[in-house]
Structure formats: structure tokens, C-alpha cells
Image: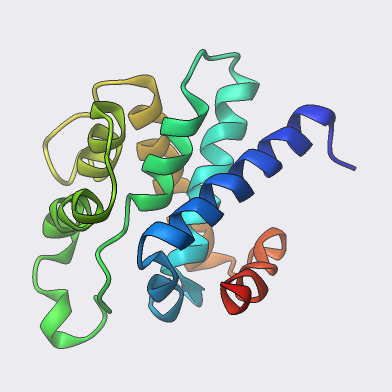
Length: 166
């Protein structure tokens, strides 16, 4: 059973996700595998959810909207990095590609840009500069490990149905 705070967080995540579904091509990323069998879209939703939940757990003051939008767009690179033409230096390049793609369809705040561009620290030696970006950077690594070694998020099985509705 979710607490009231968790229910409110889930509603906020769904709201921001639906807004991005309307204004971006984020649904395309559901067709690309990120880690293990997890799609890039589900990975981004997981990073958004767990970043917000960690902020709550640590009692950090954050901008929930900027945190969620930045996390949802942090891997908005829109290609399959497992294919030979997409894999060359993917780990180093994709934050900048994701930022460029997001800037083309969204009015991003400086925090959102920082989250997207700096989530690959320390591989890309640009450290995150705000709490929101630090949370996403940490949770991105944790989610990547979970997806690689454990597999499926039961919490995000609803994603395919929402995309089909859009």
C-alpha cells in the first residue's frame, strides 16, 4: 500500500509523463532496449520515480517538476545504442544528444539541462551542479545495475497501455 506522499508522487510522475508524451517523441524510446530487457522509456520512468522517492527519503528540498522532467528526458537520445552505428562512444556522447533532442521540443530550465547533460558523471567528467542532477546521476547507476542483473520492474507495466492510448 502506497502512502499519501507516494500516491501524490505517482500522480505527479504520471502527469509529467503524459505532458511529455504529447510534446515529444519520448514514446519512441519504448522501442529501444536500455539495459537487460528494460526499454529506454521504462528505464527513464524508473530513474524519475526513484530519484523523487530518494529525495523524499532524505528530506531534500527539490523542484519535483524539474527533477521528473530532467529524469524522464535524461536518455532522450532516440536510437538503439546496441546497433553498430549507434554504439560508438555512446556512453560519452548520449547526454549531449539527449540534451539537444530535448531542447528541440521542450523549454528546458537550467536544472533540467544540468540533469540531462551531467547524468553520466564520472564517465563524462562534468559533475552535476544541483541536488536534482545529483539524485538522477546516482539513481541512474542504481537502475542500470538492477536492470542488467535483476530484470523487470513490475511497477511500470502500465507504460505500454499509456503509450497505446496516446
